[in-house]
Amino acid sequence: MPKADLLSLFVRPLNRLGWAYAVTGAVGSMFYAEPRFTNDIDVVVRISSDGGPALREAFPESEFYRPGLEEIAVEALRPSRGHLNIIHLESGLKADLYLVGADPLNEWALSAARIIPVGDLPVRVAPPEYLVLRKLAFYREGGSEKHLRDIRGILALADPPLDRDLLLRRLVDAGLDALFRRLFP
Image (cartoon, rainbow, N blue to C red; front, side, top):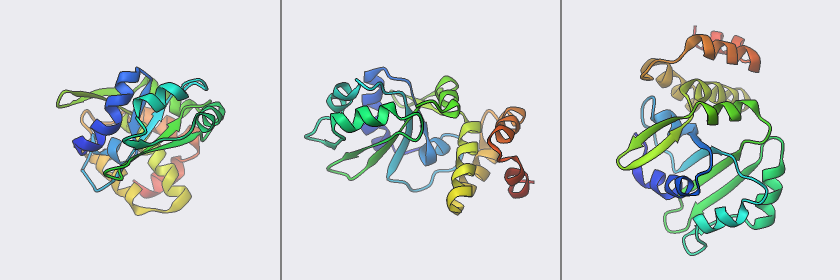
């Protein structure tokens, strides 16, 4: 299970905002597999171009570095790869916010997110099939073994188990099916 401090710092404010989001990346993987060290949290989130004031209010300047209003508006309008950082000043912990844009996989992450309680904190977590797909895409781009370790853990430990048919269809759609079959026979 991920570190509660990382979740509390970034998920509580997102819950208060009521925005659609899903925890992904290493922290998302930890909900389905083995823990590993990370000092950031990746979150797919829907932010409108006028959501900047609410985002900045949710993460106060006295505690967080957060982007300016213009940057938030520009990133929110990107059809793909919109990205914002929020950094907790005291701890250095970071949230990478990946904006949904027009990406159907990100929409899927939000619509299929599972609510998993961590103590009193409900956390919206991307489905394990999404995590496998995204981690495989990141592996293809950068070659980092950490993504393969996370995928192995999810494939072996996810409870309930992954929907293999859904995963394979999504892998075919993303052009990742041959790589998946080669790495995970």
